[in-house]
Image 1: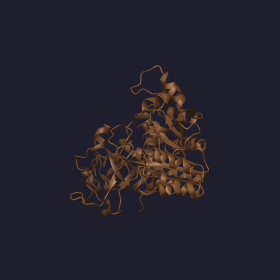
Image 2: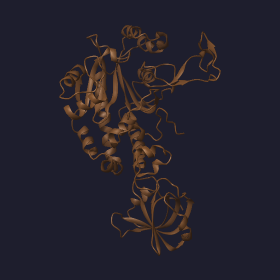
Image 3: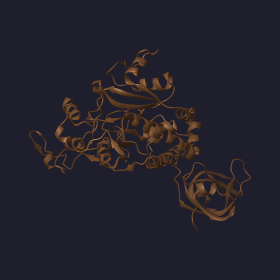
Length: 460
């Protein structure tokens, strides 16, 4: 007989005389003639209650059934006389698929997030992290659906690259050289003998590759893992994370802001429509203001604020910031949260940043001192999206590369895009994990990715 998911069983419109359910035991309650098992198979937040009486086949194995054990139950789905549940399974057959040792660490109802990070292989079995991973899966699907409906093509950017998109140099090196006996040339590692014949790294962004494809397909997006070798232990940074990166040909900064805002609002609405039970868990136990925050994001257009005006607001703010702000300084999380949580009380898109604090590929504005960059700031998180209009003018781009001392020869293909049919184009990057932090109220990026990679942490 075919196994039925718990999520489907709970949605049944009528009693079912015979069905099979398989899952893990969440709780076990015993009486003289009956044993009540709460079964969950990960398909939804709710458990299915099963009643196993002394006459059921396999009842003698019940002493081996503990919290965490995997079981197979066959029986009839009947209306439940208990409150809070429509159906229960009256089992006539019990089979143990996998016993759980009494040392199973998830016996308690509540554990700290810090402790659960030490058992990342088991934490998805908790209600919180089960819900998180279902939301993560649904949100991933929503990302693809949104961009598909907007006429974007999903493309795949390389993970191994020879280019540093951000120019920060904080990249993980990829090599086949023998690290215990590295070949040298001129006192340095001889990468001529390496697999690619040159230095290679894990990508920090799929943007440059996406630009190539946008200049052929019009609208594209990448959605994949990116890597930063940044020794940062903040709640918002991880060494491995996922990025959503659309690129649009024939688009300017205003188009970019429109896309970023509509993407965030569409995805929040999609989750509210499709993951309400799981979201309610976070609204009830993680952040009591979560649903109000999400509703506020949807309620009205985002504020669009020039960087220079943002600096003016921050300098006049009736509070002391840890990091002073002035024209030419990058905004810190405390500044971003002040703008979104205290001053405007809604998301803010800051744009037209000083060129000195932004990447070489951002379009130089007519004032010669700012670039067409944008950051979408949201409450609690700060920066969720960073993007820009890309510099499409060959002479200006070459000048910017030279000003920043970047190796021009490494960007020959990037410059070719400006030589052969250049067009205005724009794009952005949105951190998927930061988006998950926003929609769940979870405060630490380590808790929205299944297996976090941070300094000194590589569980398996």
